[in-house]
Image 1 (cartoon, helix red, strand yellow):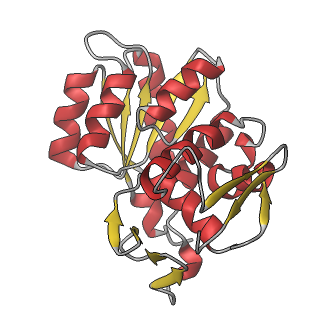
Image 2: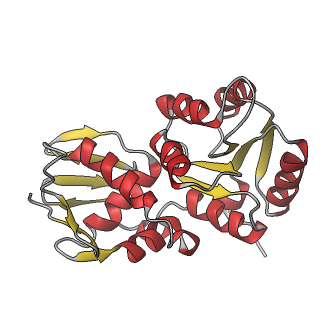
Length: 233
């Protein structure tokens, strides 16, 4: 069976536990991914700038530079997807990681199948849209090929998951979309019970896309149900 282009993606794994990096390297390499590892944040940044990976998987707690700071540093120069690994599963910790630029959060110990599903989801780039390069949604222009969004004529920089979330909503205008539907569509089935993902990313989208984020016109909350995209505000 031919190996797809996505299976050759470059993945940078950052963790100070050698047994974790060994396992992840073995598993990811067996799936066809190219893998490099780093034991701490500074080495990870050096690898990142030299190698330009298409996905970063990082532990949260490491010496010298923790995963939160690493996320911030990477996000300041790139929109590459970032998956955070941590033994802490508390909502506060997850929100802090997501708010720092992570796209997904996996709690240790994790199942290999679950992690691989998260990796595939993070690397996925709207494979069904090859024939549609861009579309308009009211006050917004969405460039699928370039993964860019213009709001009221001005380009807005979104992270990969912010972009995926907005695109899904923009494709379903004026419809109430449930929390569960959004979680499954953007993060995959394994994240359906983690609504903090939506709260963090919806808040980030509103800060970037709404004239008044505290009184949203485009990304409207439907209490206890989900969200609705009003393309014309």
